[in-house]
Length: 553
Image (cartoon, rainbow, N blue to C red; front, side, top):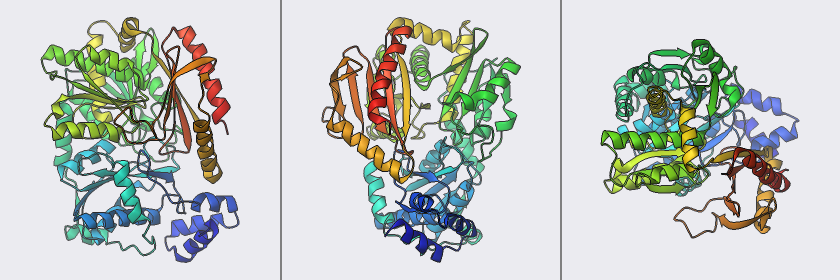
């Protein structure tokens, strides 16, 4: 069926007023129709994600129902009976979460639904707490306001593996979105088919986070921004519980707002998203600015240092947390024998050097926190979950503890505040500490560059460029010999699932990794250099010049 035929089918069957109006607005616009209908949304490293709007390639009540019915059919095949559901602050997130619950209820599946928006790690927690077979989180994480998404979790509280997601896709593809039955919300609640998550469960979650504390934040002054997202309640509560002396919250970003009017890209990785937070931190003379993304699974920071504020990268925070947790737990006598550090292949190797000093076992996994969660699950199966000390990815995601199986900005905020207070007590900042680590191990520096390929044409171009790169693998990059190439689609060196990732290590120790995003129309390139600051700058320019030559559309 062509995109235009799908469009006409939708016009004939849609009854939802919002979606109908969006379809009417597309009339006569062939490009808009093509982009909205050229494919169905696909599972990636973060589940389903797409633009809000009408069409098979967008998020709307019909695609939400279709996906949920497919999941319900798969669940019934295995005799699964329970699902947990939550949502973030995005446009229609609450509507979509209710739709998910209504579809599950209509299929005889008990749905545990949060009463209000909650962080993504909280969804992981309630999935495990209720013994749910499936968890669903309506979120598009840190993407701009026009996006929303649908993350699916297994009973272990971990995002689905590719194999399980692909199995569900088989069921989803068979569903007619206009034939899905939905139960009435109020009646389903009265009948016990849908149950709202109680406040007691939230307290249990906070208690589990607190167990990961390795000190206190007594006397610390913190500026905080939830970036209009789900961290607005739980992060401040946790910071207060560890003794933060002064907590100032960015007023304009302090409450949920899916329009994200103060920053077009509510991502704590981006300096522009932290602009208001930095202004508040300066005005209040805060020791640190902490910001969490809209679904509160990522955390970014800026540290008061040398008369100003220094933004720290995800890799730097990962190294600092590795250093802090391993050293403090050794001092406290709580570091397990054979401790475990887990990081993604695109995250800094500097953390490995730090952790190895404590006899740590290191796991390098594919991009996506579900692979870190999978390692925790395997440790748990052997009765060794306590060996897990930290998991992190360079994209500002961190987890300590096995109570959830996804990155958690609540625990990351707590530990970062404690770490800041600890070094403040020694007359140091986190910038001082990372510089000490660089002095000891070398100046590891990283860059990330993204190439965008929007719409149907862009999607085809992205596949074409990656295929061409594989067909003509470089023997040198920027005039430097490539000494090791790993294609994660075909490699057998590591015990990892197949993944559309290419890694190149150069003779001078530099490296670059190329991978398409699983959730956005992007090819991402990760660069690493470990010379001096001046040398690194030239090396990055050389590597990016190569990437531009093969990946620019």
